[in-house]
Length: 66
Image (cartoon, rainbow, N blue to C red):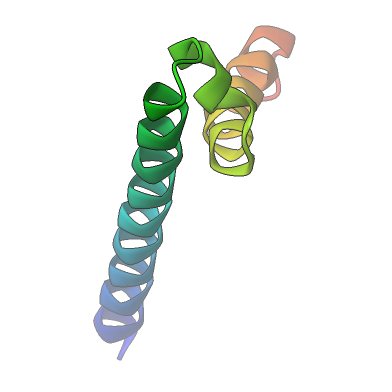
């Protein structure tokens, strides 16, 4: 039973990360089509979520919490 729950959690994380990646790529293509700089894709909702997912663990490691 525990392995089933763990497998379910892993599948949920995988599906959500794929969805977030596709959402970000869609926004990045829109930004590129409008002729704006590519860094502006990171100023959209999926870009901010991705940046937070990267930066929060780094900051916590630097502060010694992880």
